[in-house]
Amino acid sequence: MEYVSQVPQPPLDGLIDDLYYLEGAPPYARLTLPAMPAALLIVNLGAPFRIRAGTDVATAEYADGCVVTTPTRALEFGYPPRTRSVGVHFKPWGPASFLPMPAAELRDRPVTLEQVWGRPAVAELRERLAAADGPHAMLTLLEEDLTRRLRERAGLGLVRHTGGVIAATGGAVAIGDLSLAAGVSGTHLAQRFKELVGITPKRLARTHRFTAAVFAIDPAGPIDWSELAGGAGYFDQAHFGHEFRAFTGLTPTRYLDIRRRFLREHPGHTLDGWPLPAD
Image 1 (tube, rainbow, N blue to C red):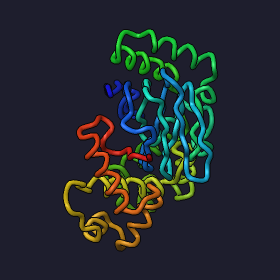
Image 2 (cartoon, rainbow, N blue to C red):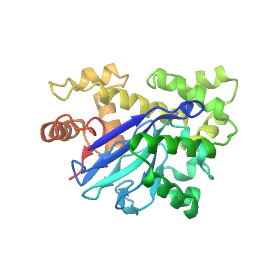
Image 3 (cartoon, helix red, strand yellow):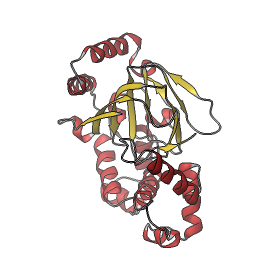
């Protein structure tokens, strides 16, 4: 697969980690994406793809693309034989400046781009992207489009600052201390996070801590799960296992088996790192 990434210029850099172009044959027809401290926007330029947001939710098809706010559980993506898209890896609060509704309404409920921006605007954007001269031109066009759509959101400065502290500490921070430092009540801080991120700051901290623990795993070597759990700040290995199932739907050992399968069958693949085979 071809993958091209581009970091946006200010002011989008405070909302977005990177913009990307993706084209080619996916390594698996279905990929599981564990919950992450980030959000996602996809502008689809190929055949429709599918998303299942939890085992109790029906799979939905997305033709024009989608927006996924910071999830609380794993998502399953179903890809066509070849996929082509451009997209955005948002910081947790990033989508809020482009959404017509509170982020809380989209929690674990991916929506189509048409639901966010309307059919005419999305159709025009997809046509312009498809006609662009190569991946970098497409990403520049998408960045310009997002800059035009950018709008102010009340409380965004508070959420960005607090979210930045949570990220910098890997989630190992007392949320009560953050609200005191910001000069607001815990209730006010939680409400702003729900509006602009879709989840509370406590939940975001949990997600950061889990993600840091997972990235500390070396799938090529032996794993001391108890030591890993303690190093990540979990009360014990049982607590860590509970969080693992909550965020991935898998036990730690099952995750490791699937992760090793990806490395074995597709060494060095551009998608290696976070997605997992769901087949």
